[in-house]
Length: 297
Image (tube, rainbow, N blue to C red; front, side):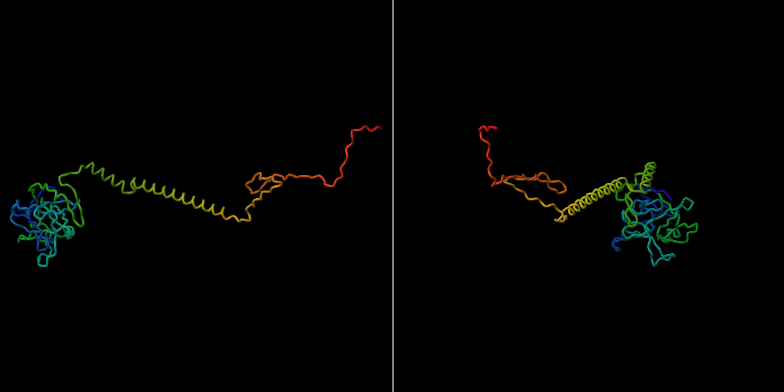
């Protein structure tokens, strides 16, 4: 895979002919701003439609767009009924939100210092080719040499435009500043961290789960305690009246309250003994006491 600086504009040409340049036109109003044309013309590298950006979306594929087309117009392919090349597939510019996998291009070496271009949609059996009439097509005749398929790229100028620092497509979203190169040691550390964390829950997630389980256990214990307490209350209140000890009425004897001495836990009641009284007989004859006189013997 070729290496490109995504913060550079490039001149694209074939067969080592720098007098020609690939053009990516702006999106046409005739297609409601969804499509534009791609073709070759005489090189004029001040023209924005001849200034191309290669933006890597992964380690295999790039997307290509021009300064003229803007950040949302990408080189892709389409079926064209009038195309004479077998496969009837031509390149075009297309708006990102209506694109397909043909916007993803692979740049591979021929081995002679030049490169050929294939895309993800059409596969590696079809190369992007400049035809003799300056138009282009995807061609399955890829046996070397193929002059119209021998691509080269020259840098023109630095982009330095925030609008071209991201790519947003239905099948890929990339946001990587073109002027920043990741430090290999940092990338390795980040990859190892991601790999080690992908197999399990994070520490925060584990703590949250533990707290949830603990809270649920406390709630369960409270509910169980309340249930047992209410059950015990119901049992106590449902004891039959016949089993409850009757209260002994207070007894009064000659105006004296006998009182209750104590009530034990088993319901038994102890009372003070009732005072017993004895009266003298009413009809008993009186007995005279001896007088003070002396009785001789």
